[in-house]
Length: 172
Image (tube, rainbow, N blue to C red):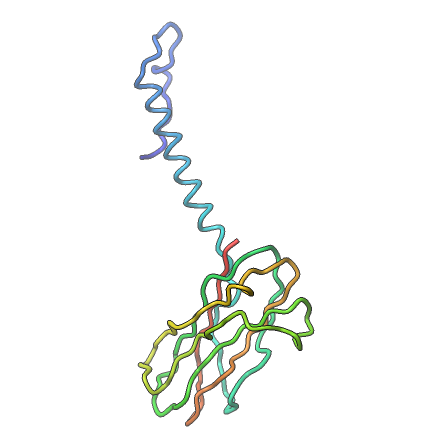
């Protein structure tokens, strides 16, 4: 269905109004409403973190990698880690944590996960993406002015995890 303009000959003075004209208008309104709903559904998604971490560190974790202030009420819906650097000789686990706090003082921040997104190097393939995340039902709702802190709670051993992706999305 697509929007269909009314042409002058369909509404000329003195011409009888036909059922086809009402059907045409209803179909056009239906098509318009479908487009609005599709656009509105896309507009509800908020990407919080979506980027590549370039890491030259041999540390076992990276705390306070990024912070984000919540601009409007929303609910977290998905989080993933992805491998860009091939696994090679890496061992251990790549794991992400996102903590929520009411201020920039993250000392009382709590994890938004009951199961953090992670990739175990022993069973990983090059360019894998995590699939094990579980959001904490009591923490995943965000209020205006709260803060989210991105941590890499575990980095693989046996070399440097050079590049990986982090992704966190919410819905308004």
